[in-house]
Length: 109
Image 1 (cartoon, helix red, strand yellow):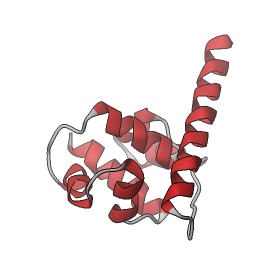
Image 2 (tube, one colour; image 1 turned 60 degrees about the vertical axis):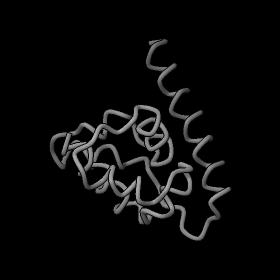
Image 3 (cartoon, helix red, strand yellow; image 1 turned 90 degrees about the vertical axis):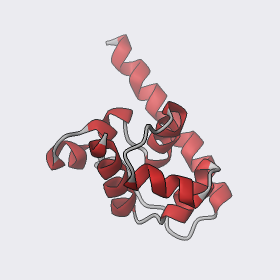
Image 4 (tube, one colour; image 1 turned 120 degrees about the horizontal axis):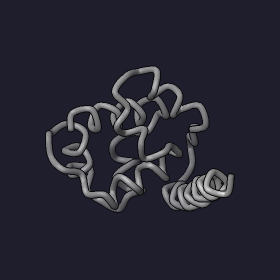
């Protein structure tokens, strides 16, 4: 479980987001999000999915066990500094669509 918390925190920091911003986009309290990063609790699957979409990474990235795997996950992720929370939510939906499209292409092969 600690791997998930460490990876979520590492991805968030790499992308330059605060806990407050991530919590706002997810629609949860910052203190709840902080617990997801710092305590050994089960993170609800729907939150992991939302984080995956928001960060623009595959869900499996949260389970990466070494830095190389995590770095590979961040290749397609990008920063969005100075963007409103509402715009971040829209970008998150778009990232979700793109990720699902890529998954469909993999299945098609």
